[in-house]
Length: 242
Image (tube, rainbow, N blue to C red; front, side):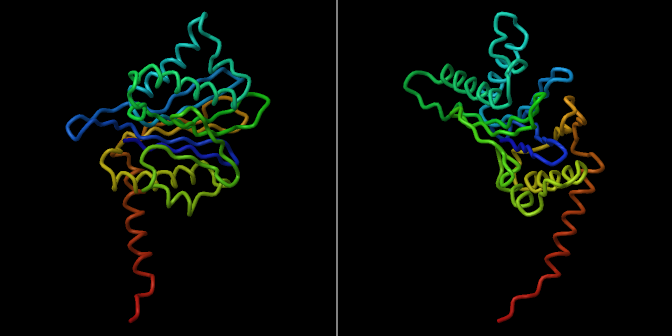
């Protein structure tokens, strides 16, 4: 399982993803689920992936290959004229990979994968999309400024209640780590290391990137502090009266 989040703030875009994949309790591995394409001073695109590992790796590898091989540069993540076209490219690639992976007559559901794509191309605003296994996609808006993929239910309540696009990068990371901590405690198939990436609007370069390990001091502080805060908040609520 996976947990990935992409948020659109007034300052830019923030992405976070775990790295655990598993095919049973005795077959656990670490794989990066955050991928980035850059063209200096022109564009930054970030892709988060969840779902069938073979499918997600094939999609990313195919997108990456088409940025390098001269005969395959069109279409390319480094050449799309807009973020919308980049989202279409990812969606078309997902459909292509799943179509080739599923044997004739077999359901493609087992090969499904979903993605979050965000970034900015010079001359346009930053944009954030969620791309479904069917290849179609939706875009973040003022009403829905973040997307989640993978194991979303445990970490969603804190984002819905507390996220404000006016938050600073530092506040957003704190909120995301609380969301991830709730997920880590509830589902063993999501686990550190956690990858973090920040893109500042109109910078056209990655502003900050870090891998957060399980024993990271700040991560531990957030986890312990949030547990204590929840206990204190619960105790402060009035008791039920008969």
